[in-house]
Image (tube, rainbow, N blue to C red):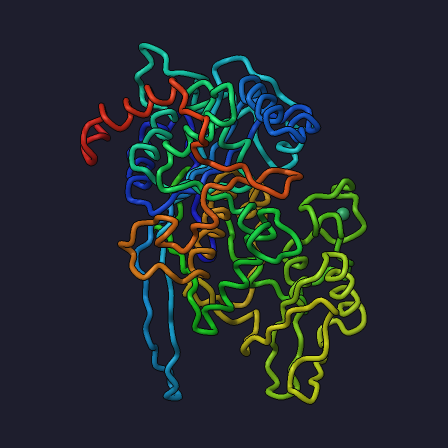
Amino acid sequence: MKNCVPIIEVNEENFYDVLFAMKSAIADSSFVAIDCELTGLGDRRKLNYPEIDLRYKYTAEIAKSFAIISVGLSCFTCTSVSDVEVGEENGEAERLRSQDYIVQTFNILTLCSDDFSVEVKAHKFLLSHGFDFNELYAKGHQYYRGCDQEGCDTPSIRELFSTILEHRKPLIIHNGLVDLMFLYQSFYSDLPKKPESFAADLEDMFPHGVYDTKYICEFHESLPATYLEYLYKKMQLKNALRRRTGDWHVRVQFPPYPQNLKNIDWQPYQDVLLYNSGTDDDGLDICENFALHGWCPNLNKCANSHDINKIVQCLQPTIYDEGDGYRTTTTFVGSLTQIISHATSKHENTPQLVRKTRNENGTEAAGPPAKKNKVLRKNTVETKTTNGVHIEPKEKQSEDIQGAGGHTAGFDAFMTGFLFATHVANHGTMTSKDDLFSANNLGLAEHVNKIYLMGKNFPFLIRTGTYASMSHNHITKISKIRNELQPEGNSLT
Ligand SMILES: [Zn+2]
């Protein structure tokens, strides 16, 4: 289906049928991105204790009492890295530098067979985003928490998680400390008592690294907001721009699944590129709360706009260049309030046409004080391309295609993986699809194994500290996964 990412819905009924495909997708991947939906997070103040030891201890309690209700798994396989001159009709050659991926995404419904707590707020949130709890209890693929249990050798999501470790795949998460702890407790083993041991275990489990896209964007990019949906759309725009300017960019493709296949959820994923402020604008101002955090206490009663496409586009105002007549885009940095007020005032005063002036040096004079302006090459939003796919003018997506507003673990995992792929492309150090996806090869040595910590100006480090050691549970389990399994290729029988 055009402009949609296919997400395979996995549950108890089809788990065994899809397991082989999921394991193959992991085995063939360059990296995997994961996102979890949980039944709750408990007391937020405790979850964000200033002391990391206490924070870890509380989160471990949460991971033992709440449950994972769906796991998004998005497997990105690099299929080519191209750097070519492409001829154009008018004779001008254009540079094309792309990193191409085939992406397979799964949304796995999981039901904890141990007793678990449910937080009312989380329940209501998920309900409001279309999550079907009846389906969860009827069709959730069951799992138990903690260490492996004797006699439970049937294929399970625990085995699927082990496949990632067996093949030593880089793991990509977004704001993922809680996800990592839940994944460990739910599909791997009992969490170690100390965060230092947890960090040492993770370093050994993921020898090619764990990347947290929230940490990367917060600490290595200059962006007004860092919640997943904003970043994803922002990077889509940036990626499309990089393609037009001959810079390294990402192109994604999906397996050619039949469109009418049962259990495939087709989610639109390019709507920000198709958004046209001229025809889609609702005339409302941007909600600052929503723009900054991705949510708003007024929910759907808010008088301002929560349209994420509008927010992303407005924070990247379109200006009109008198010189060549092409619409160009100026990106700048500043506080979100500055940017919003700038974008909104432009929007109010001159809805579709903002004139740019040039000073004597030919540099731009318009824009906010703290800007870092960059004039971009010509193009229009509504007719150009991204990811190598030509986009037609926007068609209205039907409600059923929109599904739960994109808020599924599967789609979140896809967005996280795409974000990471664009970071890899921006660094431009990967020269071949066969390059090992190691931090050094990707130019990401400063980014790897650093997990975002809410409210802290430093990350949680995945490493074996001087006085730390791996947990006994982990050592036993990882040797079982890596040494006792049959050789790669025969391990799926
Ligand atoms: Zn609002």
